[in-house]
Image (cartoon, rainbow, N blue to C red; front, side, top):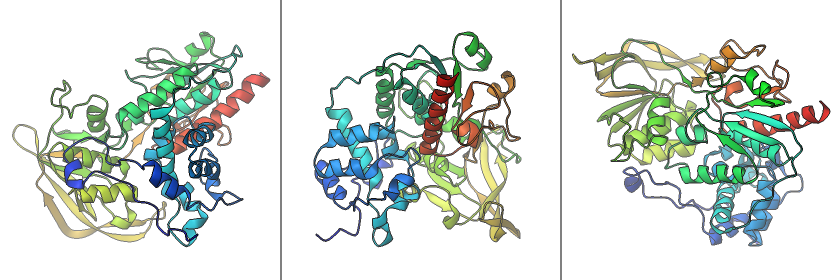
Length: 460
């Protein structure tokens, strides 16, 4: 049978329509499309795609189940290794991970692994009524700091081994970056809620509005009877350029802007959380967070320009996100770097002056370094500026935990193979260790730490 050289297209909202709403852009495969896409899999014996997955899902086996029409069987295979399949199927960069290793991709487009994972997870959530089994309790307690992808994954893996697991979340809703950072149109919050409820069903206790380092310290958790602690508190401290005008009204960090929209629902007409609905918005940065902020601002009615100091080739955002942004009418001002933000007499943003750039020799990251073109400037007429320049870990836990080593930039220092920190019984992973990264890498770190915590407590 001849193999279709291209993966099946993902049905999606029309760009003009979706640019005016916060409904999910990608509509998902039908059962028929999923089966046809699954048939493209070569079912390689050496399973290279599995090596490309940070949580090592048995990809060929779950795809085989889809071919057979056994969608629940496919879900159960994924669920053995992933606590958040509906999330991963939507936001993981499969193109640089599992799909990049797909043998079919050598000659043709790789199998749409992420799209198939999403289909299977959605099918399960819509059709399965099974009550998940809880493991026999082993009498040991573990505390998880943060309910983002690293914390939830660690919690799920430990609960399946019989540990009494409590997740402490600083905000009022569990999910971490999944609920405050990623927009509704990419990851509906009902999906995150279902994944969290699934973990609660197997015994995970989730405590919200608890700020570790303030409400309780890590040391106090041990005093409460927890025998191990996993820190998955993320990287929520935003970075700025430290240029003139950043303190003006109308300048946001992407973190604040997205939190107001995603977690506090500021985009809804009846929302009590205020947010500026700028008419001309500049988003500074080129990563996925920049794309999310730009696309949110567009949906609030703004004319949006992404300002990035390198070329499109160097944009760190996923290709899919860049293409979606373009389709929705977002403009890109490349090889441009902000110098100063101007304000009016009332302290509001009224414009931004930028330096034009060119690419020089590669820097430490391997990308060509942007170099200023002398005397070349560009002025942008804007009334709102969103800085999407990355984040670092909040120092609260570091400053209140005795014996916890951290790097100079704030990340917690760990053994890479285990997630073990310098403090006895404390493990860490995700953005709190690496700085801002992907959901699936954080999940991988959570799995690694769960395995190490289990070994530590069994041998204690």
